[in-house]
Length: 164
Image 1 (tube, rainbow, N blue to C red):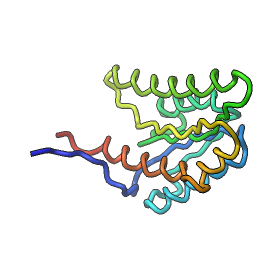
Image 2 (cartoon, rainbow, N blue to C red):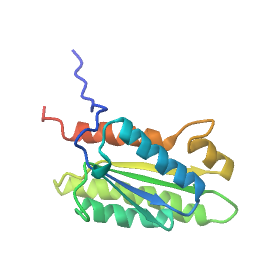
Image 3 (spheres, helix red, strand yellow):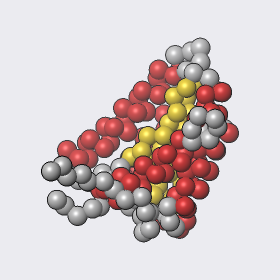
Image 4 (cartoon, helix red, strand yellow):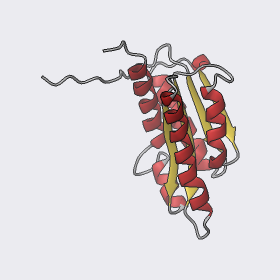
């Protein structure tokens, strides 16, 4: 018989941190608004949500590390939101991959030290152009802010589930 463990999608009592890059403006604002809206639908109390913004995506890992360390408080999950457009310069290569790598390293480092790291949900869009940013931030194709909120609640619930 196959045993499956899966987090619930009810956020009552969860503390969620959100770090959003401001660099791309409107798409980032849309990601944050849809994440907050979905968290409310999932019964996460607004008093249990802490948001902060940073200038660009490359600053996200630093703030996430502070949040993992309990500054300003302890979180059950952390959502990262932002947009990085490929564009015509190598800026994309210096921001998108290193941001993702740094966030993964935070999770892996803490787990290897036997300290439970809250789930870190990667919601930094990596696109070729502004149109793709708009489509993925609640436009025609999807709503990644909403998707990240659901993932945060499910993973937080999964992480705090009783041991097998």
